[in-house]
Length: 58
Image 1 (cartoon, rainbow, N blue to C red):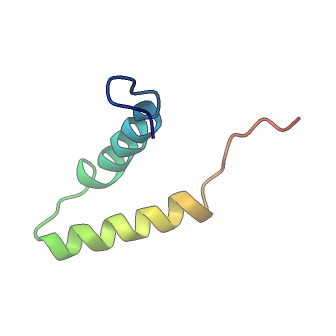
Image 2 (image 1 turned 90 degrees about the horizontal axis):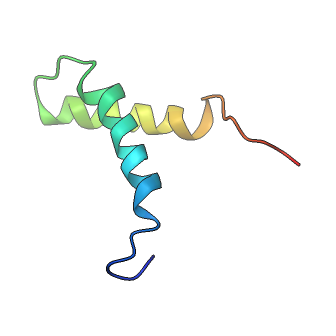
């Protein structure tokens, strides 16, 4: 974690949360909190295991 006033590690988390909201909150019609929690849990499982990761290997 960076010190207060030097938010070097904020950018990756802001990007992650932006993608999370775009893919779960804005693309679904959600009627209750439990439904949204299930959608987020499924999305996190997909994001961590099944999505194609664009990594440059040396």
